[in-house]
Length: 252
Length: 242
Image 1 (cartoon, chains in turn brown, yellow):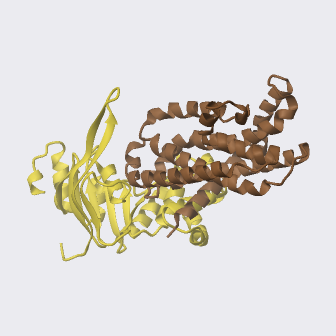
Image 2 (cartoon, one colour):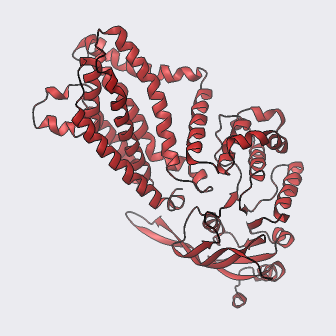
Image 3 (cartoon, one colour):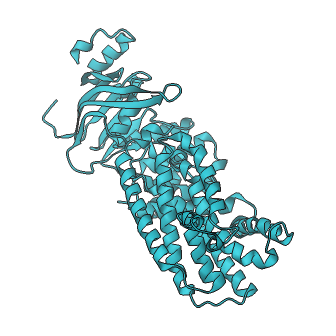
C-alpha cells in the first residue's frame, strides 16, 4: 500500500516541478519573486518614505521574510480542499494530505529565501552569530504555527465558505500588528502585551533578537507558542479526520 | 443465487446533502433514501438508475469516500476497498504524461517503484506515442481519457467500481479499452458497474439492482430487472417485486 507520506512527497515535488515548468525563467522565480517583493519595501525605505532609511532594511527584512512564509501558506489554505475536489470526490484518502502538500511547498520555497536573507545579513551587517543555533527552534515553532492555521483554515472554510472573504483581511490586520514596520518592544503597556498575543509578533521579535541584535530570543514565549501550536494542530487533525467523510459532499 | 460469500452489505443506506436555500438558510436533500443490497465475492453487479436516481452518491458510499447518514454499510474484512476506476484523477497539467502516470498511480494504491516497473506497459497501452513526454495540458480530451484509462486498468484493487463508460477515446482505443475492461470484469474480481445504459449490464452482469429516486426498488437477474426498467420508463408500477 502507498503511505500518505509518500503521496504528500510525490504531490509536493510534482507541484514544485509544475511551477518550474510554467514560466520561462522556471526555478529562478523562487528567487526572483521574493527579491521583487522585498525590493518594493526596500524602495520605500530608500526613497525615505519610511523612517530609518537604508539602515532599517535588515530590521525590516527579518520581519518580512518569515511573515511571507506565514502569509502565503495561510492565505491560500481556504482553497486547498476545493481545488483538490476532483481527487477527494473520487479517491478515499486522508484529508490532511492536501494541506500538508501546501505547507511542504511553501516551506521549501521559504527556506530558499531565508538562506538568501542570511547571506544578505552576513554580508551587509557586522552581526554576531552567537545565537544562530536557536534558529532551528524558532523555525520549528513557526512551522507548527503555520501548520496549525493552515489545517484549521483549510478545514473550516469549505464548511463556512463566507470565511474566505475574512481570511485575507485578517492576514492584513496581522501583518500590520506583527511589528514588521515597527518595534513592538518599544511600545507602551498594555499595547505591547496585547500585540504580543499575535503569534507572528512573537516570532518576528525572536528572529530579530537573533539576526539583528545578536541576542537571545525569548525562550519562554517560544515555549508557550510551541505548546499552543501543537494543541491547535492536534485539534485540527482530529477535526479533519472526524469531518473527512463530509468534505466530498460539501465541496462543489 | 448460489451460496456465495457476501463481501459488502448495505442496509437502508441514506445520504443527505445540505444545500443553501437563500440567505442564512439551508435545506436537506436526500440523494439516497433507502438502499439495501449485498455484494457477493467475485460477482459482477450492475446498478442501474436514471439521471438523478442517486448513482454517483452510491458510488461514493461504496468506495468509502462518504459515509451514510442513516443505515449501515459493512464489509467482510477491514479496509476492504472497492476502488472507483475513474478517468484523469488528479493530473498535474504542467507535467508530462509519464510523470502523471506515477502520480495518478499513487491514488490507485500503486507504489511509485512498482509503477516505474510497469511504466512501459502503461505507456504502450495508452497509445500516446511521443506525446507521453509532453505536458498533459497540451493533450486533447480524448488523449487525457486514454492516459487516465491506461493507469486505471493497471491498478489492482480489492473490488472495482466502474462508472458508466467502458470504452473511451476514438474507435480504435474504444475497442481496446472495452476489451481490457471486459477482461477485468470476467476475471474473478468483484466488480460493480453503475450506469443508466441497460445494454452494458445485459452483457456483463450476473445480477442487477435498480435504483429509483434514491431507493433500491428491485434486485434480480439482469433479464428480470432490465425488462422492468425498460418498460417502466417513468411509471413505477412494478416496485412490489423489490
